[in-house]
Length: 417
Image 1 (cartoon, rainbow, N blue to C red):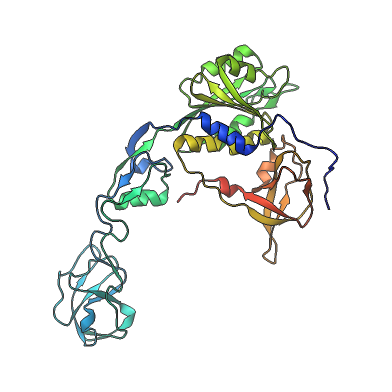
Image 2 (image 1 turned 180 degrees about the vertical axis):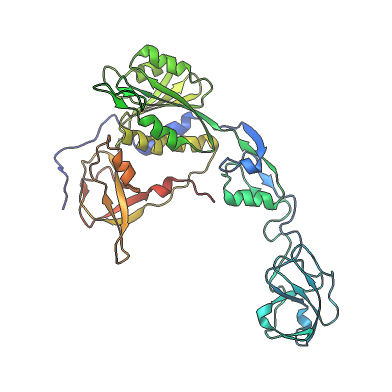
C-alpha cells in the first residue's frame, strides 16, 4: 500500500532532469588533450593519451601450456625416447630426435618440429621412454606466437584507465613509459559564516565543516590534482578572494550558498566572473545546483550545503564531468532489483535517492532496507549505507515487499583491474 501523502507534489516547473543537466554540462566542457610522459610504474589509475601499439608478438615463441612432453603426433603410437628437456627460461634443442620426446615445463619453448605437448598425467614412463596413453591432436597445449597480442595490434587505447591488468600488459610488452592525460586540476572550498575548521572552538550557531572533507575524499583519485581553498565567509569580498585563488584549476567546486537566501552570494559572484547555466535539478536530495564558468573555460560547480546533497550531486554530476574531461567512457552498470524490507515515503515530482543497506538473510535471499532518517543533513545515513534506492519521478513511495531499483556504492567505484 502506498505510504506517501499523494495530495502534495514535489515538482518544480523550473527544474531540469538529471539527464538534461548532464548533457548541458558536457556540452559546455572541453575534453583535456594535454598529456604527460610518465613511467609505467607510476601510471596506475591514469588515462591513456595515445594508443599503445604492440611492437612484439606476445608470446614471442611457441610455448608450452602444460608440464609434460613435446612430441610429434605422428609418432605417438610408438614408445618415445626422452631426449633432453626444455625448461622455462632454459630452452632445449630446437629439434626432436626420431621417435623422441622432450621433457617440457609450462612456459618453456617448444621444439620447432614438435606439434603437440602431452601433459605428464597422460603418459606412462618406462625407463628412459614414455608411452602416450591418450593420442593427442596437432597443436595440443601449444601457445603460438602472438596469441595474446600480435605485432601491430593496439593493446591500449586513448581514454582507457590503467589498472592492474593494463600495467601487466605494458610490462609484458616491455613498455616502460606511456603518455597519459595530465591530471584534472580541481579547487574545492566551502561557504558559510557558520562553518569552522574541525578542531577549532565551536561557538554557538557554528558547525564543523564536513563538506570539504567529504568532497575532497570523493574526488581524491589518481586522475585528479586537488587544491583545498578552505572556507569562504558569507561576503562577496571573501568569495571573490577565494575565486581569485583558483588559479589554473579546470574545475572549481563549492558547497553551500546556492539557494535564494540573503547570504547566498555564490550565484552573484559567479555571474560577475563568468556565466551560469544550471540552477535547479529535479532530484532529491540535491535540487539546488549551480553550474557555470569562471572566465572562458574554468568550470564551476556550486553544490548544496547539506552534506548528503553535496555527496549526491558530486556523484551524479561532478564525477561524470571529470570522466568527460578525461575522455573516459561512461560505464553504466545496471541497477539491481531487490525486494524492499520496509516502506518508503516520497512525493512525486523528483527522482529520489534514498540511502539504504543491502542484506542477505539466512536463506540466502537478498533484500534492501532504508538506513532510516533521510534528511539531507544526516551524514550517518551515508556511513550506514552501502547502496542507493532510486525512486522514479512519478513515484509516490514504495511498500514493504515491493521490488525497487538499487545502485550499490560499488557501481560508482573504480575497479583495480
